[in-house]
Amino acid sequence: MDTIAIIGGSKGIGNAILKNLVETHKVINISRTAPELTHVNLTHYTCDILKDELPEINSLNGLVYCPGSINLKPISRLSLDEFRDDFEINVLGAVKTIQKYLDVLKKGNKPSIVLFSTVASKLGMPYHASIATAKSGIEGLVKSLGAELAPTVRINGIAPTVTNTDLASKLLRNDKMRETITERHPLKKTLNPEEVAQMTIFLLSDKAASFSGQIFQMDYGIVSFKI
Image (cartoon, rainbow, N blue to C red; front, side, top):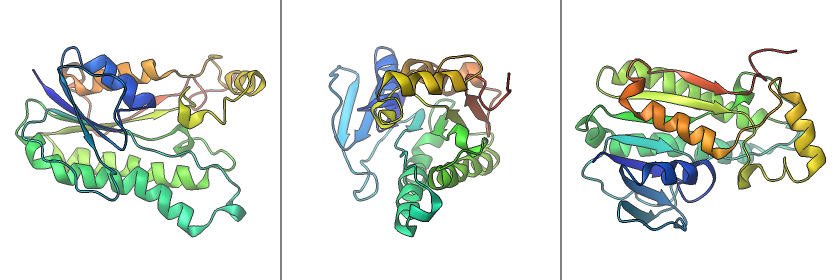
């Protein structure tokens, strides 16, 4: 049974990934809080990714880094510290994790890494300066490591549009805001965590053996076209 490590699997997209993997994989969750789910295949380590030492893992086939932020403000109200904070949680946390587990990943069976970007890295949106800057760093990391780690380890990124999670609750806090955001998408939908989880599981699997260094837009058309 393959082992997948999820950073940030207690909530949101990470939790959806965890729930979909745990019946068929050994899952190691690393996050500040434990997931509500308990399972014989699930091991949890309480850890603050930016402050604490990551736990030792002896066997690993896949790595998913989920922590992120949605810090939406005009550029005039964004402090340099906020830019640093967003960069640290989105990019440096991912780098720290990959550096920690790369050697054990290389020994795994067809290992794969999945990181997360945002549609705002491709589509200019007001008030997204900090998060788009950080997530653009993730996209650069995916491209660079795709080349550097080939052919041993695959790495890909997913760039979701607004997803119905606690992190996006302020954007989807009432029916009017949900309707407005839905109407902005040409396919008239927004994402749910289950959809993103299924894409993640695909990219981790050997079914995605031909993909590395790619960013997959899960955008319901908002980046791809306008109608």
